[in-house]
Image (cartoon, rainbow, N blue to C red; front, side, top):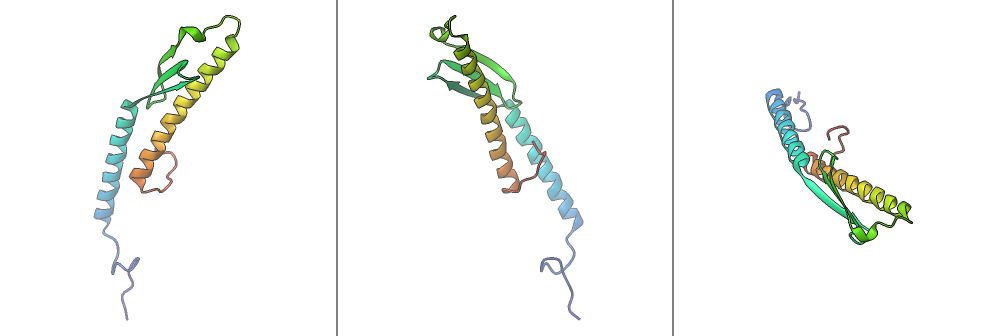
Length: 114
């Protein structure tokens, strides 16, 4: 009678090897998370009228507003520019996170890792 293996490997997978691989992947993810949190990204809107700097933890580090954009008669435009810049900065961090995860997981979508 022929031996049955898992996935044509000829036997049961080595549990120690699987555990080592899982631990290595966890270490790589931890390192990637730390590197990501240390990153700083910058985005601007309105032709550079408002610039936002954000880190990988999605914490806003700095907002720069060019003086010529400040119009007391049009506060709404300034508010819209700030909202747009902040939202764009957050989206940039999320894209970097997604790219990093894709590299680590080989494209597998594993929710909740970052």
